[in-house]
Every structure is written in C-alpha cells, then in structure tokens.
Amino acid sequence: MACLERLKRFYGSKRWPWIFLMALALIGVFFFGYQILSHLINYAVSNAAYANLRAQVKVISAATSGPEAAGREYDPPIDMEKLSEINPDTVGWLRVGDTVIDYPVVQGADNDYYLRRSFDGTRSDNGCLFLDVRNRSTFEDSNHLIYGHNMRNGSMFGSLDSFRKREFLESHAEIEFFGIYEGFNLVPFAIYVAESTGDYLLCEFASGQMFEAWIDAALAKSELSLNLRPEAGQRVMTLVSCITGASGLRIVMHLIMEPQ
Image (cartoon, rainbow, N blue to C red; front, side, top):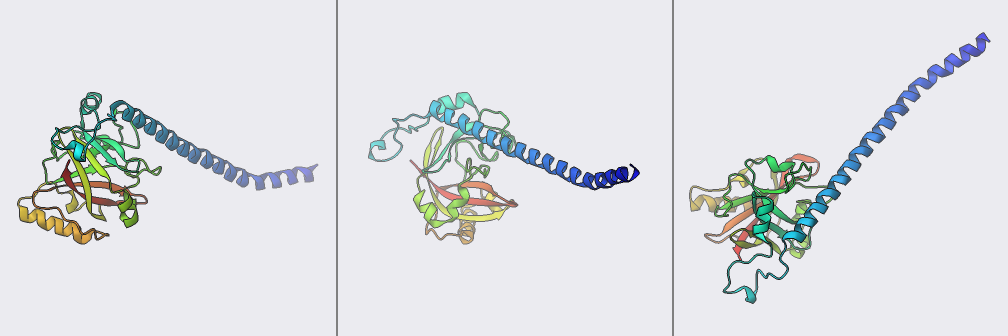
C-alpha cells in the first residue's frame, strides 16, 4: 500500500505542470478567439451601418460630370442635407471607384474624437473618415488632410496602401469628393510612406513659392512617377492612413482637386 501511494504521488506531481500548461493554453485560445470574434462582429456592425447610410442618402439619378453636367449648379449624388441632419459634423463624402472607399467624411472638434467613433457617434474600432481640425470645411485651403484607419478587412482606408502599385492605381482612377458646397474629381500625383509627423501635414503656406516647394518635395518622395503636378491655384487633398505592423509609419497620397 505504501508503495502504491508513493507511485500515485510521483505521477500526480508529474502531471501538474502539464495540467497548468494546458490550462494556460486553453485560456489563450479562448482569449484570442474572443478577440477575433469581437473584431468580426465590429466589422459586420460597421459595414451594415454604412450600407444602411448609403441607402438613405444616395441620389441615384444625379450626374456629377460629363456634358449633361455643363451649365448647372453643383448637384452631388449624395443628399448632403439629409447627411448633415444625421450628423452635423459632416463635411462631405469620399468615393473611390471599384473599392470599398465610399464613406462620409466628418470633422470633429479635435483629431481624436472620430478615431474610435463611427459616423453616428457610437464607439467603433473602425472609426470614421475625418478632415483635419485645422482645415476649413469649405475646402478653401491649399492642402486638405483626410484620415482613416487601415482596417484588416479592407474597410475604411484598408485599400489605400494598394495605390502604391501602378496597376492598381490606374485601374482605380475614378476618385471623387462631394463637399456640401462643391464637388471635386481627385487625381493622384504623389504617393509614398512617411513618418507619423512630416511636412505632408501642412495645410497652408506663407507664400506661393513655399507651396511650390512643398509640391516639389512631395513629388521627390513619390514611389510612382505619375507625371502630374498641381497647376497654380489648384488645391490638394491628402489621404492618410497607418500601415499594418508599422505604428510609426503612414501611407500618404496627394491628389489634385479638380472642381466638377
């Protein structure tokens, strides 16, 4: 009997480390499973909310360019009045053809509020596309900064990094911004990776010469040679997003704003 008890104690003591490790492994599986499930639910809720919003505010019959648009007042394919009623922070709508980028753009009291809030103000890891707080919502500045998250499911600015490939850029060249008072066709002229702080964050310039020097710097940094340059008096829109796995870096795309 004493021998049997000693054997039980021996094998029992050997099993405890394995039981402990298995318990830790199970806790890890449940934790990461919960995290993944939470992200999937968040994506689904956010996508459904924006799909519902598009259904509410899109005006199918409106034409924004082409011969039929000549001689008429600005008439965007988005019901801006209704969009502003839903959220008074609305400043416009950004659409990139053949991508999921088809979202409202807001402007908060600071550049933090909409990082973790959806268009309707609810908490969301997806956030919302938003205009830099320093910019005028009438889009009369030299450079207008719009920020958006690089989501793993491709939503928000999740496809922005793909524009670093010429083939993707050329096949997704239809980019439009519809403001409350004015609409623009957006034409990319520079795209590159930058630190989280840099001169791409400038909105206004003390002189035309300084703005031209800023354009020169953007063209020099561009990963693609697009043979385009803003003409005198043209405004710029800059789209900014983070890069997966590189918290200190940003993808930056500068676009010429051509009034519709």
